[in-house]
Length: 84
Image (cartoon, rainbow, N blue to C red; front, top):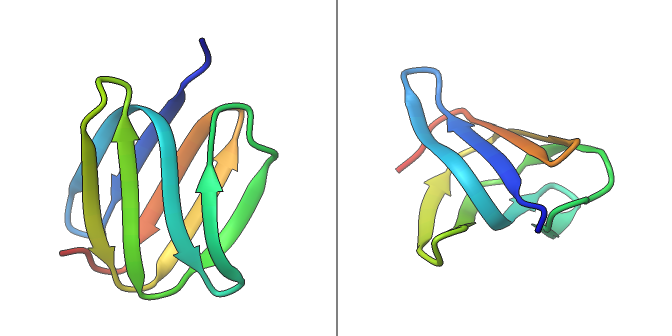
């Protein structure tokens, strides 16, 4: 079964890294959900929640203030200007 390799970083540190089955985030264009084999995407993050559902079933939520999200080849890279 396909999975996503996710990296969530802020300018200060790596916030979360691992394998996930789903990521959801808020961009300037609206809310998006990312599943394995998602089409390539580059977006600007709006202030809001980023949810990561890990492959072990746990779900983690981060409050992100601006930044970028990139999706390609089952890799999701999220750079948040700041995270809580």
